[in-house]
Image (cartoon, rainbow, N blue to C red; front, top):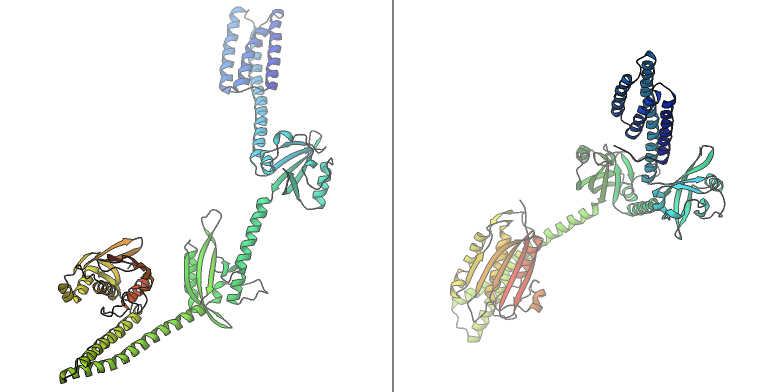
Length: 578
């Protein structure tokens, strides 16, 4: 494969050709075949130089030897000519190897220079070469990119023209004095802005010429990164969350102010010991096992352990995260974050106790309130048995008393049931909704036949839920539809279910009297009723109970209705996995 020749190489080849022509002319003057032999040397030299190929050199040498033998046919065969040609072949081979070596050395030097030049251009640092008079002699691409200089205008420009705070016209010796006596961070002016750079330099001598070799690193990104790191450090240090970095064995490497306050660390000594020493002895083995798992790359969160100190015990909620090495292959450190949940857990226990006390109180009150109501109901039944001849007005009063007593008893039962929602045993199981609905419908068998009510269902069979909750939901919403049915048309109730995102949606539709959408916000408040009509029975707790059940499953209820036409209740229950 040929290569493009430089001016120097062309000049060398021209000299070889001129010298060879001179030798050929000598062939007319010298009777021997020296001129002819040299003529054969020319293509060999030329090919060797162009191709730099040992095989080509060998082939051409063989051809030359063959041509030399042919000369014996045209010249007198004598010892002088034979000796002369043998010496010529020997000189030819040696000269070719020598010329190849010289050319190889020249080529290698050129390649090295090219590689160095490429290396300067790909290095991220700016490189600048300046002569003894302070003039710029060379620079790399990074120098241009970093400082946004016009590369076509910078050769022979004075170095001092770039630097802020130095008089123009001064030599680089002045800059060297600045760099030696002051900080190595200076400012370069570029397009009217000042860029902080870190400068390093080296003095070099090339063929008795003195140069300075400068490297520049733009500190703008470093400074911004440092500002961000300082900002993060300030945020971390001002946080009340404890943050600690430990090694795989649990030895504390660094911690923030929040960790010091929670663990009551003495900040006078920078030796913090092992993280495990802050916890109870019974938990150390478990914690060491957790650290081993984190050391394998696992994240652990929301674990709770007790710490010990001279001021007592604290309950911490802790999370562990692995910190990987640069190549993200192995865990080198572990990040630990924690908060003090001692007071939170204490408050939660108090709240749970208060809820339990309230439940017991509600049960006792409900029981105590029901006792006089039972007595009152018994006395009214005795009056009926006595068959006393009451006046019409007295009979009307007695009837109202019976209804009020029953309504009061129903309200107390509903209130008791409402207070118990969410406080039952965690009795979650796989429930067949169709079977639950069948049980609920049986409660209304008589009224369904009496008013020709149609109930159809399209529901999923298997759901993981508390059976009593879904029973209460269906009973209250079906009861609500029956109470508020339209007087002029048979009631139709449709019940269906479907999944939406991570929720089970129970849909209850009816063609009843509908709901005024302006009053939807008041539907789910306890003791709030859809109608003021006293002829419609109800406690005002049914829909409030439905909302409480939905909230227990992290859900909610949506209502869609048109007054006088229809109502739709969408009950969203978050799906519970086994």
